[in-house]
Image (cartoon, rainbow over all chains, first blue to last red; front, side, top):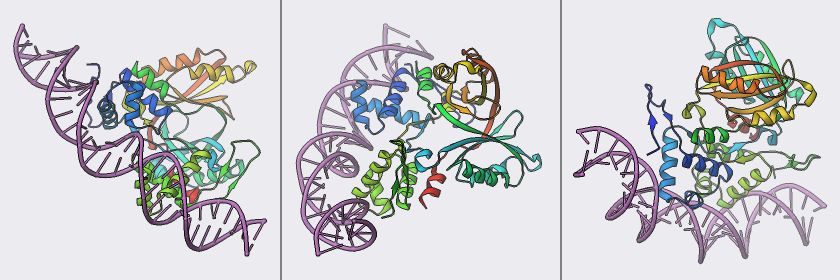
Amino acid sequence: MDNLLSLRATEGETVMTIDHLDARLVALLAAEPRIGVLECSRRLDVARGTVQARLDRMAAKGVITGYGPDIDPAALGFDVTAFVTLHIRQVAGHVPVADQLALVPEVLEVHTITGGGDMLCRVVARSNADLQRVIDLIVDVQGVVRTESVIALDTPVPYRTLPLVRAAGG
Amino acid sequence: MDNLLSLRATEGETVMTIDHLDARLVALLAAEPRIGVLECSRRLDVARGTVQARLDRMAAKGVITGYGPDIDPAALGFDVTAFVTLHIRQVAGHVPVADQLALVPEVLEVHTITGGGDMLCRVVARSNADLQRVIDLIVDVQGVVRTESVIALDTPVPYRTLPLVRAAGG
DNA sequence: GCGGAGACTGAGCAAATTGTCCACCGAATC
DNA sequence: GATTCGGTGGACAATTTGCTCAGTCTCCGC
């Protein structure tokens, strides 16, 4: 058996080992997402139950967290992507700031970070002028002292996980 | 009709207006991705053909770019996320650098940016020690002069687009 | 060496879903 | 007034799903 999975202390924090079949399955689904389990089993030349079991297992272990739909903000008119570094007043902590940021639809993700800044968030806007509006919203959040923004001009490598899956799966 | 779509100069660069039904449809699919068209139509209380048409239209216009599967790098053992700012030698341009970066599985996305740095990439690694290895890979890329990294300690707001869809869709 | 345990196969079945038609309706457009 | 477009509701065959079963194989511990 090549499908060992090592358990961690914390519940749910399972690190899963992926084998080649898992990797091919994920790659196949990523390439043609609308095909079903049966079609997958045909393409991969394994039994349907096997595909089903693999998908169930990966979903259970948290490797596959969902199945889209993947939205392109640019297609909705949000052409501008920017990364905003936040400096915050430390007294109250990050949580209330993050909660407020979560209320802004244009804020797509927020991280707390090491280094010069305290938080990093990815935002989108309809234009550079609109970006100013979004940044103003962020600056207005209680606890935010200062922000620095960099605009993404181009995205030569869009977000992807397939190479990682391949690397993990042999 | 409230589904107007305004055309742009460049082919494919369509900015699409989303209505409330579209937004609800996307939200529904995001919440329960494995339900089919028929189930969607029942939940949204519209005809199946309508759901099918909406999905086809959003897919055609590029709003929906795909249907996962969404992979969680952490579940694969890549617990550490970092953002690496690259300073590159400008002579050859960004492209060859991006091409090399794309060969590294741990590099999940790459942007060219304004501001102090030249490129920003998001990378993952199995540990802080492993991150050093990944960064070394990046530094070794021809044209990369220097890097600055910030590690993501926590992600209070994970990547999301639903609020944006809701905002765009009324 | 002798059992398990786990994974995969191949098959079968009823139930549900899909893809694809159709005709009809109402609203907005010309 | 005629046309176009989006939505409705129905129908159909073909496919897929969810589930179960028995049999085989390999790996592992006793």
